[in-house]
Structure formats: C-alpha cells, structure tokens
Image (cartoon, rainbow, N blue to C red; front, side):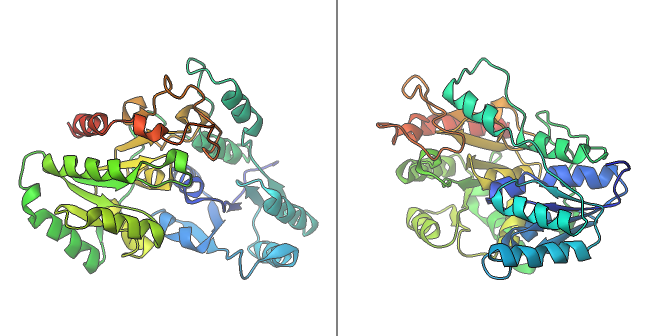
Length: 359
C-alpha cells in the first residue's frame, strides 16, 4: 500500500490453534501502531481476544449466516460497510479467496500472507532435524501485517512478551470460587504443589496422548503434590476425561462443564500447561504460561510451536522407532504401524520435565 492504513479488517477462521496463534501478533501490532483492527473469526473464538485493547472482533457464523457464495457476498458487503483501508486474509483458502475477489469488486484492496505450503510439504518429504527451522506461523502472520507498512516486533525467544492479564484478573465469581477451592485442598499444602493443566487430545490420533498413559501421568503428578485440571472439547472428549478422573482426588475436569470464556479464566491461573500439538497449548502460551508440548506425528520445526516457548519445553515421540516422523504437516496421516507412536513418550519423562520447568 502507498501509505500506512488506519483501519484493517483481518480474517482467520480455521481451527482454534491457528486462530489462537494470532493473539500475540495482533496484540503487538495494536501496541506498536496507531491503527484500528477488526478481526473476523468464528463466534466461538471471540473470547480468545477479549483482553486485547482496541481490537474489535466480529463473529462470523459461516454455517448459518454466511453459507455459500451468496453468504460470502453478504459478508463482503458487511466488510465494505466497515470502511477498512485494507482487507488482510490470514487464512488463504477457497472461501477467503472468493471473499477477496468480492471485496476487490466492491473497491476494497486486499492482501494475504505466505503460508509456506510448499516448503512445509518439502520438509516433511525430506525431513532433516539438523536443518534450520521454518518460519513460525506467528512470524508469517507478522510478515503479512508488516507488508501493509505496519510495525510488527515480536519477541520469539524462550520468554514470551509481557502479556496483559488485567482483563482476566476480575474473574467471574464462579471461577474465583473454583480457584479458591483448589488452594484449600491438602495436596497443594506442599512446597512444590502447583496447578497443572493437561489437554491430552488433539485433532488426530497421531497427536493424542493415550488415555491410559494420561491417567498414569495424572496420578504421578498428584503424588508430587500437584492439582491436575483436564481440558478438552464438550461431548466425547469430556466423557472420556470424566471417566479418567473418576474417584481420583486432585483431578478436575473442565471439559464440557464451563463456557469457553470461563475455561480461559481458569487457564490463566495455571502454573503450567501440558498439551499436545493442539489449540490448548497455544491458548496457554498466550497467557505467558510455560507450556510443555508433546509432539507425536508432527514436529515444531514446521512452524507450530506455541508462542514464547523454547526447545526445553518440547518432548518428542521416538524417531528411532518411528523414523518417518513428521508423517505430515498436520499429523493427519499415519504410516502402517505408527498408531502407538505417542506411547514412545514415557510418563516418567513428562513428570521429570514438569518438575524441571516448575523449578
């Protein structure tokens, strides 16, 4: 663009993890530029961004209100009415490409970003752990914004940028009562006692920690004096976590019991999160928490490591047993015999890493 924009409309739908990775980038842009940003995303993701000052979030229900080409045309006209200087597509799929075309017809300039699809596929096909890591998704988002003439400075070292939790300090009474009850429990009356989040599920089996090992891990953490809070999606995941936690003192199931916004309030109070290559790890990282990520069929060198985390906060499936890891960019493909790969991350290694990170 010939001059720096004053108002941009940014779109990102997709999975929760991809959307959550926008948080530190948008926060940085708004803190470093005099600009207005309207983020268009799925309604259920709006609470992720509630603590970012000056960010406007417009919920877009693609399944009902904006379905098909006519629905996208309606959305394009609504974006036009926002009067943005530019529309930035940080999703870049068929749906958003159509939206960009409509907007250009309406006189709204648009741009996108480099997803790095080809280089990611190339890296998977010829993986070499000694090669330099690809750009992170956070960096790719930042470059898409910088191309508009905006300042975007990210701290991508092991210490995340100082994220403002002020909007979450005034927690809802229900959440505050729950957190107070954790402090009153005897297992936390030890010097090392901590509140640890654990999200064993992921989008695909090759990234999900087996539930029998997950139960063993929870028990081991409780024996260390910690409380374990289980995160997951409503429905089947919540039911499985409830079964796992049955009759287990010190394990608390959040999945399916709390609205998403309140889950985030609880998450902000954790001391550490254990997550797979999944959205919960990115959500926790947005609060500046240490996140221990367990990698199965995927690898962080492709660009999906949670923000502000370093190598010491990553554990990997054994590539000596499973040399074809990463099996795909997103972990949706498993070669024959690779189903048990997450079992090659021992519970003992996770517990030791947790103790090291808690210090």
